[in-house]
Image (cartoon, rainbow, N blue to C red; front, side, top):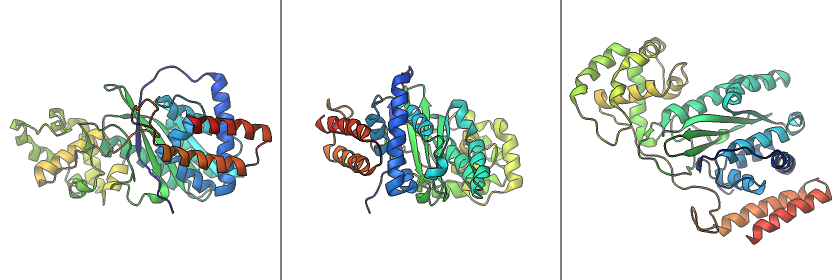
Length: 361
């Protein structure tokens, strides 16, 4: 079976809003395409494809949105959520969350569907939703603050996540893709592929190279803030290496002291349980990572896990020349879906025109 890419994509921050006339059409066409995929390939296949940043970007382009705008993520997810509204039971596919305040309602929406459709695995999905956000905001500190979180799941309990963070300094948004069935360990290399622009200051605790550091972080979390503070105090006279994403302010444990005391009482058994503990955020994780390096000599990885960017490229060579093979695969996939779907003839013709136009670009 063909391997699918998962991971992260970067896009420039763009202002403005999607025109109502365009969003209406995006909602209709996006809903039809999703319904066709689910009908002929099943809801889990839709999760697999939506968690592929290349497919996601291509779908956004197909629906007519700005190809390199950060708004493609929020607008496409919003259009899919609205396009599938009322069809959840029929399709066995549920979409929760969104942008800003709506993203924080994700656990409540999952719980609502769980109660309405008697899904006993809803609490596990809520846990996964929260942990995914913590991984990309605390375990991978790349300078992008999350502001968009969409959690998709099926009646069988399979799930996928599309979330996005913002970096106000470089004016970029970074999109994170997850495919639940292929996440073996939340704490170690949960993304199968990474798309984007490399950052220089990154604390990457989910890297394979950070395994020993993660183990020592868990060990130190059971020691309490006094032990960690006493060990770190002498290091104030040292100069930190430039490669670190750790700053002098991280030596001040007062900001995370309460959480460290609670962690000492809780005594986490592994990095996932530590990360999932309430109150553990970027500052707590940085303090523990610094302690693991200084006290136990196990530095974490500081490499950004990014390897490539965007979907098909551009005809002007920006960010790279069009990958025609990849482009043709996307078009052929949509053509098969459209030809096998039950949409009306007029809608088929309109969708086929769009596909033919893309093929001739």
